[in-house]
Image (cartoon, rainbow, N blue to C red; front, side, top):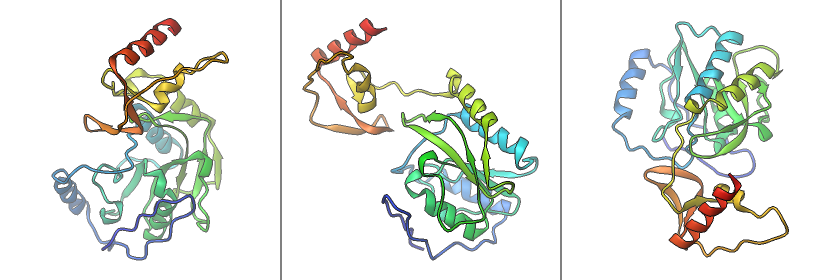
Length: 249
């Protein structure tokens, strides 16, 4: 079965071929065992800090669905294919999907009758032509483990009012964000800076700072995807940036 992925600013076309929904929990566990030995590659990694994920899962448990006895699925992992996953009865997806195909995933899960509670891009949270889902709107930015800082909301089909403005979930996520244990921060090699890293060096006055930088843009470092890519600076410019860091500390 071909996998349709279209990256665009607008809603993606619907996938017409869907998997047969007759799997059991045993099938799911066997599939997970096989998945461990497949290559871990993806173009849309966005690793959720564990403490943030736990805060979201606990909110679902307390407000929408008692998760006791439910099989919680996280199909959006490196190398995974959510359309080929098994979704047995008694399972619910609580996960952070690739935002580039967010609308497509919501439509497909709705058609497949999969129970879900998904992270979503807050600024484009609503999905057209899907009337059977509910939205949770928060006031929070989540800094994911790959460095992406995204204003995040949620979509689900677990019932309740069409819209929930969740101040409690916002607070729980913001508390988790400030828990240093929530983030397994990736320390880039010396001299390696992403565009987001470099923003802190922009002069505050009406001045300019010119850097030569390197010709190559690194999208992965030590097997980790770097959000937005990174540039390698020579020793002289690296020392200049470190000095600016020290002066502003």
